[in-house]
Length: 111
Length: 113
Image (tube, rainbow over the protein chains, first blue to last red):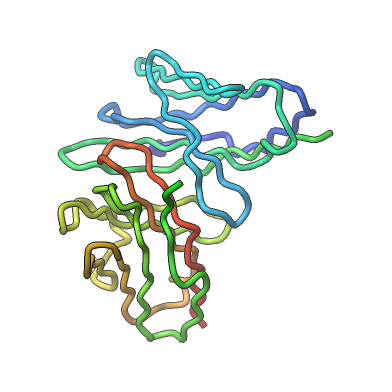
C-alpha cells in the first residue's frame, strides 16, 4: 500500500458545485497533515493544515480521521479559479520529520 | 509577505556536469527542504536541514547530492555528475517547525542534455 494515496481524478464540476477529495495514509505514526494546491508547472502552495477537530477557511473545509487514516477536503461553491491539482501531504515523525506527498487530485471547474 | 526565492529559474547543463541550485528561505524559518518533481509525477522529498545539518534524507538523496547553508540566508543543493534522469523541477521549501506547513519557492527547472 502506498504511503499516501489520492484519487487522481480529474474531477470535472460546474461552477458553484460542492466537491470533496479524500486522501488515505498508511503510516499510523503520521503526525501532521496538510492540503496544498498546485497549478500547472508552478510550486505547491499551502492551502490549509488539517486537524482532527476539522478546520474551515472560507469555502474550504478540511477534516482528519485518525481511526480510518484519511483526510478530506471539501470545496463549496466552486470557482473557475479553483481549477488546480490538490496535493495531500502527510508528515510522520520518528524523531525527525519526514514529509510525503500524494500524487494529487486534479480539479477542473467549468462554466 | 515573505517568500522563498530560488535561482536560477531554469538551468541547462550537460550530462556529467555539476550544478548548484540556490534558495533563500523565509528569514525566521528554521527548517529547510529540497524536493524534486519530474514532469507529470508527484513531488518527491529529497532532504531536510535543521540546525546546520541534514535532518532527514530520502533514498533519492545519494552521494551525488549535497546541501549547504554557506551563510545566514542561502541554502544550496549541489548535484554532481548530472544524469539525464536528473532533469526535473527542483523546489526549495522552508517552515517554522519540523511538523509545520511548508512554503515553497518557485522552483528551478533543471534540464540535463
